[in-house]
Image (cartoon, rainbow, N blue to C red; front, top):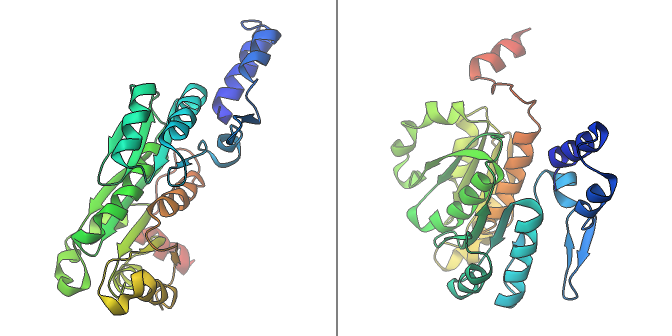
Length: 266
């Protein structure tokens, strides 16, 4: 239950359209629900703007299915990340409207249309980075963002990026996903006024050290406005991007590069 639903519930009680007992029953699962194997945090959407997300590794398929079902019943929108096909099969049996995004390894349930929270682009250096990028993109879309995908524009052929510069400036936040040496985040950060969330991936040869080389490159960027999440953490990038988008006042248009230049000259 998110802030808007709580407000509607209180308004119904105040107007007499809903009794106190029924309202209390609807709030029964707050702040958390003890399922024995997990304590499901139903307060998270009030604190962070989005319900608790299920991380599937380490849980049985049956446990994931129960968590998804309870979250869907309470919130209508659910994400479960790093889900294997056999986990989805168990979830689907219990939650028929669940969808599986195979490349992203994400299970999503969307029972209500989400209010658009803003616009983001997810950018990859190579096609091998797309699974992590898709995790970020699908999670962002489920959280209510409009997402543009700009894939395979890495520094080995940097001219491929230039055609998307205008599109990037129309976005409010950019998620840049790169393996190998991770240079693309610095390039994008140096070309745009938008906040950049860099995601290093484990893609690369031996000296990439499973993404550590890309992580260190991104952390050492000299481009301003670049933040870095953990290796292969597409969900973490999406959560941060959504928080940035939600911080923009409702109805406010993203500032353009000209707006920012004019403000700096005042």
